[in-house]
Length: 167
Image (cartoon, rainbow, N blue to C red; front, side, top):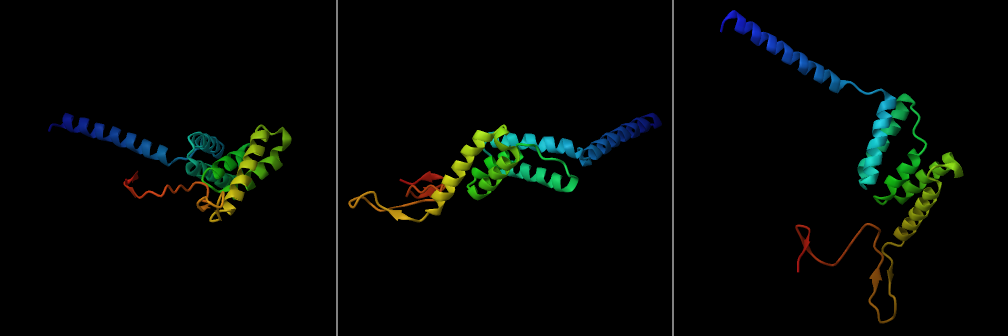
């Protein structure tokens, strides 16, 4: 290889290293806390809409961590969103605590006031129903005995192989 070819190769290598270095430093940089808050809020909204409560709660927990670390103010509807996410995986106690906090902070003028009251009713009903889990009852004296199963648990009495019933 002649000197011109070596120079061109070194120049290309330098450009490649510069691009790699810039990419690595951009990845390592964080957004300002206010922008991170907006990003996590959007993530939480997306996960709530797709009913992925676990991921919604992860995004909402990141918002709480930002608040603790940087003192950012959480959005006004934060506790309503937290209640929505907490109710779906079967944590009615967490959902009740969050919706009560939302109602306390937002009051009757809150954007989600009526849905928050509905969510509170649903969480309390879910909690009451789950308190009955394991209870055995019968609709009539000739009817079979049945048991109350916690919300979110389905037992169809069939054995399963690979997620499909065995018949």
